[in-house]
Amino acid sequence: MNELVQRLVARDREQKEFHQAVYEVVESLQGFLAENKQYAKAKILERLVEPERAIIFRVPWQDDKGEVQVNRGFRVEFSSAIGPYKGGLRFHPSVNLSIIKFLGFEQIFKNALTTLPMGGGKGGSDFDPKGKSDAEVMRFCQSFMNELFRHIGPETDVPAGDIGVGGREIGFLFGQYKRLRNEFSGVLTGKGLNWGGSLIRPEATGYGATYFAEEMLNTKGESIKGKICLVSGSGNVAQYTVEKVTQLGGKCVTLSDSNGVIHDPEGIDAGKLAFVMELKNVRRGRISEYTGRYKGARYVPAKDAADHNPLWDTQADCAFPSATQNEINGKDAQNLLKRGVKLVVEGANMPSTPEAIEVFLKNKIQYAPGKAANAGGVATSGLEMSQNGMKLTWGREEVDLRLRQIMKAIHSQCMMYGQQGGFCNYVIGANIAGFKKVADAMMDQGLV
Image (tube, rainbow, N blue to C red; front, side, top):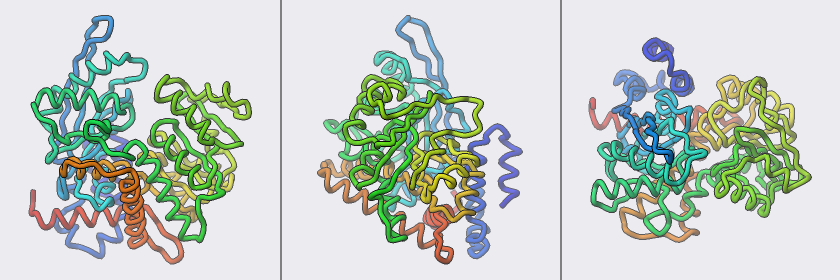
């Protein structure tokens, strides 16, 4: 297995994020593969780390000054063994092939865990929507779709949103696809409610992570109620994690963005969260403005040279990293332990470094990797696809109930394969459960 990782590194040395994602999966699967040699013989893992298809394309567009801009677009279609490719689109300056491959690879296992028929894929661009006018974002999205439309479809590849791609961007992308194809279909998820979207979809990742945390705590005879929680980020996932934690009786005391961290010891209640949602979703402002409104809170600016994040050096019971990859390093993990945190649930994709994960597992912290804990978003996208296919709309309560049932099922799968005495290793459990479903489908379908 180490030879597999070494070959990947030798061939694409610059793809560090992808290598990190593969290494984590390979390491956790070693015992399972040793006992189930049919998968090694069929070289399932060697086939899985190679995408079925990777598309890179230029995206020319015109800004409001009339100047031509050029960005790079990506769509990596990793695995269609159990269903059409499914995974979000990320618009952010950091996007490159390594980032998209790491996200797409993780998506294979995450989608398999949902129990829904969805393969794995991911896409995006190094375009930054921050600071752009609606007209500029529309022109970019239309140009992006002018190429992407050739490769997607409701039975082929169904993209969704991610960082930098919200309801506005999904609307522009869908409109251009409809114009090019002359058809109205469920080709994207995260759509507006009045044109094919699903209730609970915006809330799903944050709600799902909280439901998963509740299942984890239940194994210890505990619940979210009364727990102090740290949440990073201030976007969609963070917002709805705070909302659901609060509804379940917990208290969230932190949020952040790329400029810094706010800590509110009194807790971010529904009224304060409404302010954050208006600040971030409408005015697109900075989280530092929170302390201007709520005097009991303090703001700590981000420092690029710092070796730790002060957010994770705050007294609490639970942590929900919900911002971006590798936001918790080894020192942050040690700080979380020192501050009394006993549960870490990843709302973001791969927010913990390998060093941080090692700290969590060594100290028997309840730690849920993103492929399991944040699968609520793609699960509800799958429910949106089902509703589109049947040409009907489910009510809020029904979607929320299905989401909770899916997160409960994911937790059960992790427990089935990750139990180690009285401790559950959710990393091993999630990877084995997801891998087995995809691997069995690949074995059935032959060498393709």
